[in-house]
Image (cartoon, rainbow, N blue to C red; front, side, top):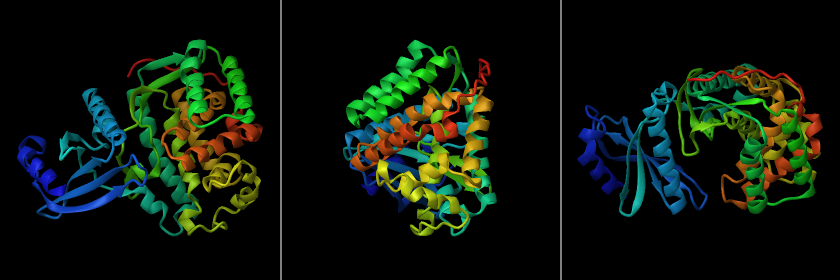
Length: 372
């Protein structure tokens, strides 16, 4: 497969990357999703042993659809001149079939994956380093949302039906439903009624904004990858929730699966508290992040609250859109363990919602300005 890809790129290279050294057969596989609909990601190097391009190869029709979405959304952002995409995201160079496989060719972005430093011994136990990760991610995200802001949508019966009810209906059909989830949906509807008329910003959305898709140099963000779930006009809160949620999930993995994590003593109290909702390993980190005490839950809370303030969204809107975020995440991958794992988070939120700041009913309505 590599040979035909390299041959195609050499034939098109003058148009694709004029002035850049051509790719050679030297490659390294940097990603291969284990899920059935996953993709293979390969870096091709030039004669100077420098990365030339990144090539994603679809393995199924679902993977092909993901590549088409990523190519389209990157082109769309570049078309509107969004510098926080053109200066940070890979450039989409080519989308074409090779040997009956769809490939997406992207420019290479410099930087070190934030996930690498996350797993560096001692990193996630250091409050200053963790705060640096959140600051780097938050600075880019706020700037991206601010630059792509195109207006606001009032939270009314029509938008609730489209943004909330439709999501829960899909979730009910594809994941499951229980009395806990029914009670939560009723409570969410009640909170939305209290927020009737509240403006919700419409911005660009990355769609999978977590450490594994971010590149850094020292404390500065240099790249944002994997835009297949991106939107040019969506509600930005999913990006806002994704980063702290993922960061809290894997703290034990950063310490070889140990339950006793240096710097996070309060996390231990969540090991047994959440067992009645399931045994998904990420459930403990979820509880610690959004229901816990200590410096890390506070970093996560400030990340969400400060960004919402910058967007002009009342914190009470978390009670509407955070459950929607969990339901959407459950449907992202057609993998039973993943779906049931996120379902356990939604059930936990349903039962324990009064004990998290995400369910605050503060009436701090703030307007949202129109225009990019």
